[in-house]
Amino acid sequence: LMDNAAMAKAMAKAEAMAGGRAGGTSHASHESRGDHSSRASCSRGFTPRHRVVVRKRGRGRPSTSTSRRSLPRTYEQALAQAHGAVRDALKDGEKLIEVEFPPLSLGAVCGDGEGSVEMDANLGHVLELSAMLVKESKQKNLKVLLPEEKEEEELLSLKEAQYPNASFGTGFLTNPSLLGDVGLDLFQKPITECIDPEDSLFLAAYPSFSVNEMLAVEELHVEEPGTPIVVVNGELDRFRSGYYPKLFYKKVAAMSSSFIPGFVGAFYLHNFKGRKPGSLFRRYPGPWQVFRRDADTTEVRECIHEQDERPTLREIALEYFV
Image 1 (cartoon, rainbow, N blue to C red):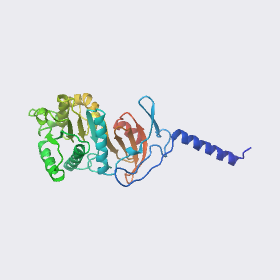
Image 2: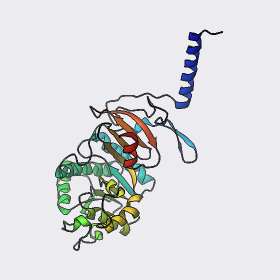
Image 3: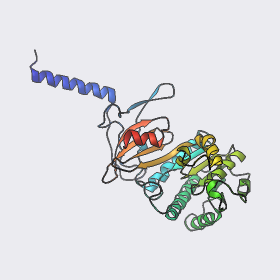
Image 4: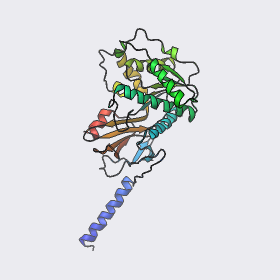
């Protein structure tokens, strides 16, 4: 017969082996170059409620947690991941594609900086992503649509200085209007005047200042339903959350229920601030992942949850960051 110490040791060993079979093993690796960042496992150091290692896809096909979809640490990595996600979504035939990330710092939230500063940052990100789509994905006849004509001119000036050989067309979505804030513009030109028959891909650049900008994107989809649209930093969560009162924004309410749900989140990063900071992240075609951040440094600590279906920001905030 075993004595108490030997029996306890044997039981501990058996429990450890059972835990390894049930939850799998994972290791965090740290790489400093290229498109690799500090990688966090989705199964380390958490209770079973948060541990998600083996997942089911489709009709029961098992898939292990993928560390390659870890959070980017630099904008170079973020844009490379965004480009890859858009490329994969286009290959799968997606027509409405969302790219969303903080424009000033990957650890910040939209609105942390002044509006004009964030717009300037977005302009640079859009140029980088557009150049990648043209050069690496061989996207011919890409049309980049800026919110207004002035910003189109700024993009063309920046393109001439940084990517003079990048071949893509440009246009703009709206004209400034006093009624733009409520989705009305009596002098708005038809969106068809900004596009050409040969356009094969539209990239709508940060259409988030006026609701008319996303209404123009919706009009574009109605006119050209077969041409994919990539929306970069359009802040579509405002439409999903009911931010705009239906009483005053009837056209926006209709768009929020009929058009916005059609977007697939290809590359998405939303940060949660507060006492328990964290992030919601997705890189198509992978799962939606929830990361915990360090409260003092905001550095990513662990991936604590993942799922196939897109969650709401409210759900994630209440479940993990309150």
